[in-house]
Length: 135
Image (cartoon, one colour):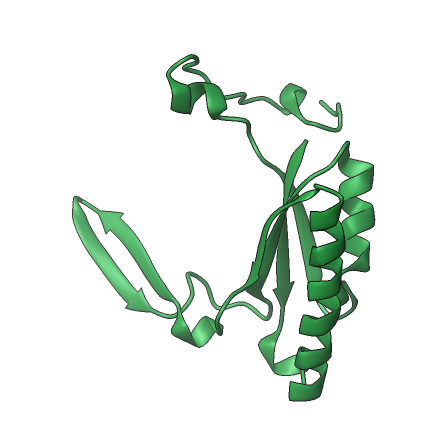
């Protein structure tokens, strides 16, 4: 099952030394997951100050500088992993350094390969389609 781990935290809580140590440890975890065939992608994001937000309203683009919403925690990076189940995704997320200062949101990814190849035309839409079996 594929999961996206979304890394949230307040940018201001990290010193430059902590940020560098986080990057070193996160890179080591990424290499380990890649060697196990479980890492599909991962990357930190530039500061929220570099964000551009786009909304389409009444057919017109509304573009603003900055994030979509003012929050105390900002999206700072992501991992896309392919693991057996939610428990394994939680185990990976719990090892990530940002979990100790912020939040790691774990979201299952819909398999849309059939849509992209033209074989299917529907996405799962109900909680019954949840990868952890909850309804």
